[in-house]
Length: 163
Image (cartoon, rainbow, N blue to C red; front, side):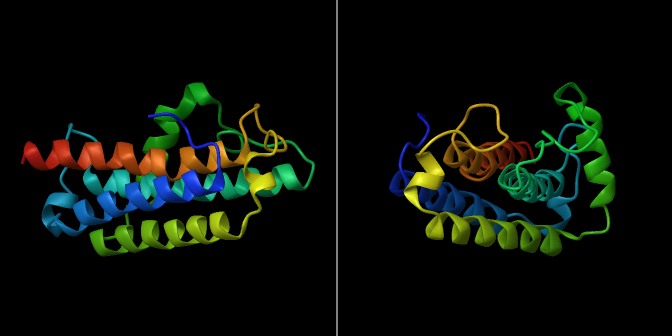
């Protein structure tokens, strides 16, 4: 699926992918959400992980706007260290139950969507995100939101089929 290139496209893909993921999350029983699917990662993990990456997007946005270096993927973390980083995230969010993990993602989605709605077209697609690696701010927002929603929904569908 090609990336959005306008605010209208970004909003449409965000709302469409969120609706699919939200419907899937609503169908997942509590006990199933917490069971590891591949021996390591559960539905709950995937949902909390997606919420965290929306927070990272806003961190990158703030750092870029401030004119400082943007720590991608996060401070002290290299892209080659994502497996360990994601394992640490699972441990950090271990206290969340399924309802809290869903609420965490719903809250971050609402923040992202609200920001998208108020962001001017020029901020989203007028040039590269300050401090980024060449993508527009809108493309980073899409990666943090609807692209992650799409991959999470794919994981949930596979997990539920395998149940």
